[in-house]
Length: 113
Length: 113
DNA sequence: ACTTAGTACTTGGCCATGCATAGTACCTTA
DNA sequence: TAAGGTACTATGCATGGCCAAGTACTAAGT
Image (cartoon, rainbow over all chains, first blue to last red; front, side, top):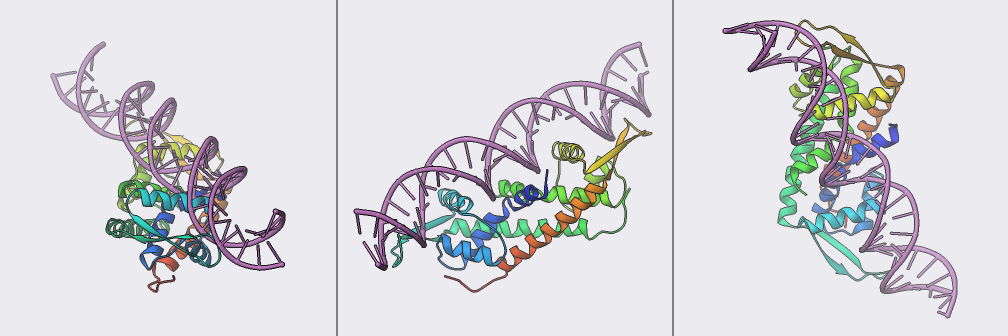
């Protein structure tokens, strides 16, 4: 039980939410997402992102099309399906609730025993 | 891959943070924590809380003392160790960073492709 | 004494997901 | 042909929240 491990645990599920949000704003491929996540200081590695995208696609929340690239192999450009949009709405509510609940606890200063 | 499952995943690690925070404000036992978590709308069940407390104690972040009760079996009253206080400080920073990073992504409205 | 209900804590196994690591495949450049 | 970069894939592990069942102690009713 160390800090680094808890950081990892805290990220579980949140990443899914962030990824769906990024894709909701326009068609992107994996490296675009990594760039944006990195610039927001949300560290993610390939080995996490690619399996997540595959899971989301297999669940019907995402779809992609192959697009030729001028500098390398073709890329998968992702976008949300209708189901993905609905799912994202649900996640947004869940996340907002969670942040709010956490604030109710951590902003309290009086004891309760 | 459904909403309920993602809610569960999102809670990973965050609960640990909330529990440590509650204990940091005064000695409490498990039911006190459940009451406060419930009133903050953070749903937690016994089967989650008790193992978590045991893990935190075994890691040296918590310590407890038995206190007799007038209405049932004795209770374990928990408090933070010095190490637990330091750990909580680290978690606070991690959580604030994570919330901030998530906001940077979810409050953006312009596309990036 | 015995049963019933309530409170407090324990234990074992399941599952999803982030991560580490290694690997495949394609393109460009020299 | 070789070297390097880019993009995607596959396998297996560790963690922690959950479920379900169980133990143990107290109080109240008969």
